[in-house]
Image (cartoon, rainbow, N blue to C red):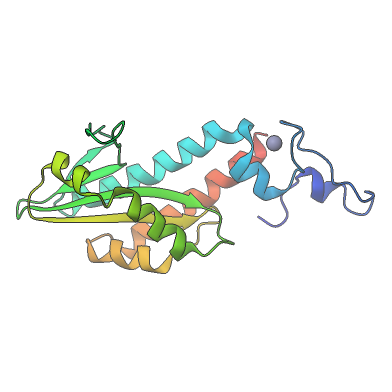
Length: 184
Ligand SMILES: [Zn+2]
């Protein structure tokens, strides 16, 4: 990733004090982080990357005996409703509400992971999901360079998702992040 040809990198040695603007949006310097995580031009690609991770996790949960539903909108009286990426239940009445996030790894990933969990950790959502007893809210959190938030990976492992699947997701995120740079 460190050798990808963004404008900032390509101009190294020839630039003055001003960094080159992103060739797509012209609003920010064309840092790798901007291209992969911020630029409006790559927004669609980020959604595809997110959906690919969701699909991999949903598949792994299904294989582990979970009954999985993806992106269903739950209407609630308190707001416009919530649409978690995954709601999964097991015959023993346990239920998971899970969201996927591909984040900026330079921030404290555990903090980002906790914030995502808080978003769905609400009584009114639990009521409309109406899966009874053991509801757990979780987040699958990894950086755009494919590094997993340790706690998130640990919890996914406890659900029956293998290390192999977590590695596959890392690979997918890396490839998709690379693709975002290439298509700019
Ligand atoms: Zn841009």
